[in-house]
Image (cartoon, rainbow, N blue to C red; front, side, top):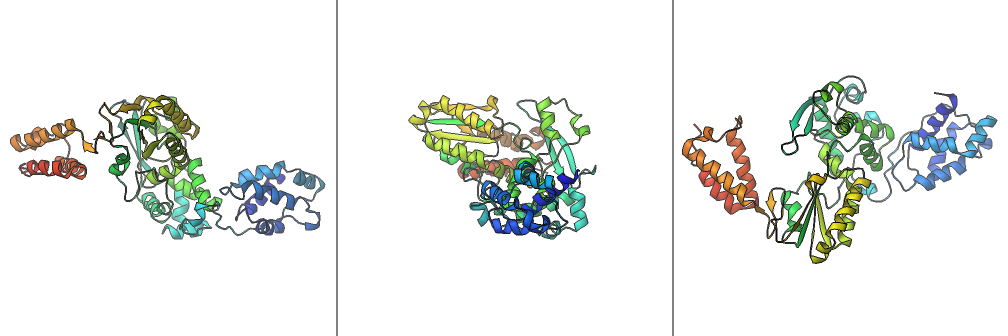
Length: 430
């Protein structure tokens, strides 16, 4: 690193160590670094310019501020004249949440990596080991085949210590940051019923799907969440490393992946299998939810999202503009950095069977009749011929599998669930 780049970086770190809306505080952090203040006429205009640009925005990275300093005409002239030298000094980092809602988030105040280790109940060496960029692998990898498309889903499960740290991040930080109201998945108190109920009995139902939802959310998006919350860059980057992952090359070589798939998995992303990923996915999609909710409202429609499934519904006015709405929604999805899965797009009118998330929505959320009849037949045959005759996939705990399906039916339709439960009780599991 050149002498100028080193000095600029030190100044950038000091300027971003606290709120950038407070110019006096920025000057106080920067003045100990610039030498002779009588000749540092460039400093106050620079601080004013940075405060106007970033004062109301989420905390910028030091790299971004360094670029602004490097382009500042006053600093360049001072450096050329020998007045831009920066002395060794350390600014104490502070919390700096973005203006507005982030200022009200009840998250822990963490300004150093030592504070982060204490908050996550880790030893400092353990935290350093987990966030290091070495060759240590903290995940186990498992491939799943997507039944309909034949493509692959990579399950990245964190090992014991990392999973413990991620659960602390989820419990102490992420659960205190509210997602958009339209996000109905992965949040306490919400279920699939909350996802589909706003869309029952509507003239038109539009279903959209996001392709490779978790792998498409990069570490840069996650870093922006923690910076918006107000954490200093060092803490935000450590939290990002704890919650994102890049699949190692040997794992990617196990399958015949397309180039876009390989690029997504090889780039640091939200791992499907980490306890923090669902909450971070919701927060990463906040702007997407805002824009799609506004679009739906303008079209007289309702909008909800459950992970990568998007539902829109409305009356006759919405039905008349269905095609234009679908194209506009797809454009917004792309602009927000996601990819629409066009193969799963469905436009369902009231005269058709409107279904989503395994439920039929024409009148009230209900179990698909075909699924109900199939499950009833399985239970009846289990009672007549024994459960082994129906366990064609050789599931290790077939009873638990059937119990889960019964619980789902009972949750959606208690009456139908009770009927199936009576048949289940007749099965001899001995």
